Image 1 (cartoon, rainbow, N blue to C red):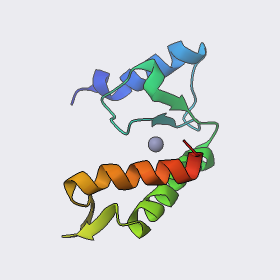
Image 2 (image 1 turned 135 degrees about the vertical axis):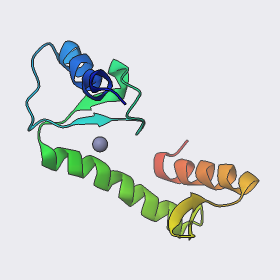
Image 3 (image 1 turned 30 degrees about the vertical axis):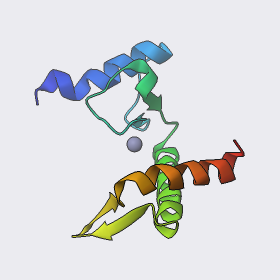
Image 4 (image 1 turned 180 degrees about the vertical axis):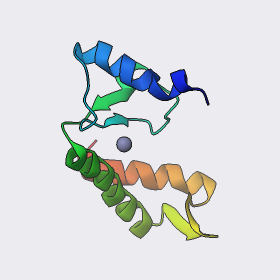
Length: 100
Ligand SMILES: [Zn+2]
């Protein structure tokens, strides 16, 4: 990883919002891929607590997925459970949460 790669997301995000970004404004990678610096994948947070809220919201979803048996804790990490079942369960959860 080179220096330009490390800072690319800042440059792209500054271009996106049209002003410099301060160190107190974390940049969140929406798809969690730090190498994907597409402007649509970057969210400039107002502060660190907003960034924490974003990550906590995902943890809340993970809790639901764990309780629903979509993910499991195995060998020291979280993983998706078996194959065909996952799609059905995820669809059911989405239907319940969002009603489609
Ligand atoms: Zn983040």
